[in-house]
Amino acid sequence: MTSITIETVSKSYGAMPVLKGLDIDIRDGEFVSFLGPSGCGKSTLLFCIAGIEAISAGRILFDGQDVSRLAPRDRNIALVFQDYALYPHMAVRDNLAFPLRQQKLGPDVVRRQVDWAAGLLGLEALLDRMPAELSGGQRQRVAVGRAIVRNPAALLMDEPLSNLDASLRVRTRTEIKRLQRELRTTVAFVTHDQEEAMVLSDRVAVMNAGVLQQFAEPMTIYRQPANLFVAGFIGSPQMNFLPGDGAPGGHGAGRLIGVRPFDLVPAGGGPGDGFALTGELALIEPAGPVHYLDVDVGGRMVKATCVDPSGLQPGAALTLTAPRHTLHLFDASSGLRLAS
Image (cartoon, rainbow, N blue to C red; front, side, top):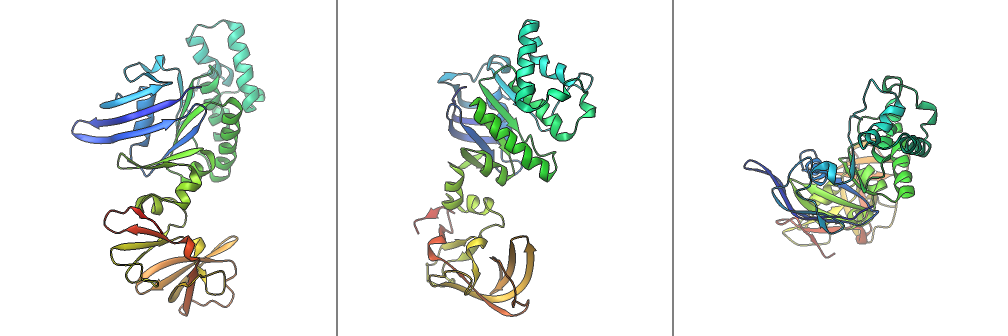
């Protein structure tokens, strides 16, 4: 295990900046996700930590030691890729053993470590199979096993679940979290899926255009987003944003009010605390335990929710209410969160 300090790290490709002065401190044994849209620099940051990419400025420290100029093989990290990267001509047993044999460890040590990793990940019955005979989830477990078999100081994962179907993705992320807790390994996990980041992480680093937007515990980011980007990126459906000068309550010009769809319900369907919007119901979308409501409020489409849409008709007027303590205030110019 190790702590990882990213200290004013920048990365450019020629004249194009990709990472812009990032400061992130990952504690020993912590699970941290780098979350953001495609092209925000999260995978580049992971590759800089691994040493695959050289940084342009700043420092990367492992347990306080500067490793910025060390080769990847000297950093004692393991990297799990999106595409598994298994050797197709090797059985599972040999795929797991490969990094140990590269270190020229003895046969007994290799066998012991392979058996340990296989037992931890439930791969014992698959050791003699070839990668082509495995499902996507099984291949991903082999890739993780090959990464942990040599007890790395840190485990770096680049969107390892994105190739899996929805149900398998849920099961595999549970296995990854269980594994990390058992091993107490430091993990840096890249994802564009906010649900993965929220469920797996001790803390989440939200990035956009190479800039760190917020670094905090998942529910802190959800409940107290630092700015408009974080507020809009975290949460599904996306937070509604309303002009402060035109919204009920007179929050003032130059401000935006944010309210999450799960906090905005038809009048009578929950506490309102005086915050209300009236518009025309455009669409009802069933989504399992809740229904999403699209409501046209003065030409602006607002998303709300309800449990039982009985009696609601598209085209009819509908008043929505939200508890006032659930509202978020932002400066319209800077995008920064304001005190409620």
